[in-house]
Image: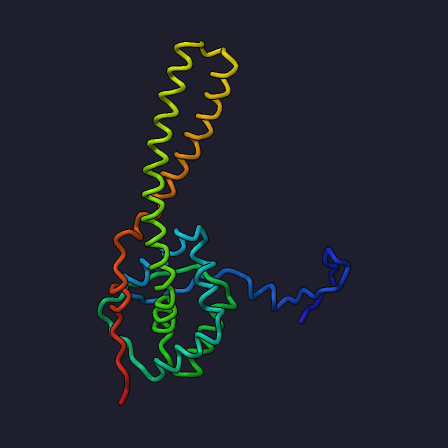
Length: 210
């Protein structure tokens, strides 16, 4: 193993290892998951503004939770129905950990992922509530923006575009309109959470050996 010394900003020595760097490499991994699980991964990543890879790595590298889940699905078989093949980009370390725990407990890797994603249900519930509050707030913002634009139009008609007060108001409204557009884009991009049904995460058929 190759190890290299380096100095961090505090002046202390840290170590970079070749194995550590390889663990951060991105690899492609294919799973067969329920459509609800795939939808949940997409929705949560969009809501939190993170990449799906980051979400996957967060779930896969929580070894304590993965071990607990593996014990639940130990020696289980996963039915072929209601599953969709999906390829994700994850870190090599995350994939290795999934494979290691899957082998150790004889637990289906797909089930480990599916049950891990079910841990996101409280996050989804909280984000659904936030989405409704954001929509309500944005409705008020739109009304406020429209009133501001009407006021600007009146100021320009009375004072002219070159008036310093009208010009400053125009600049403020440009900024306001830009912010409102960004908010509208975010709400549109994340609107999938609005109709997400948590029951969709119970589609995978896991059969336990007796």
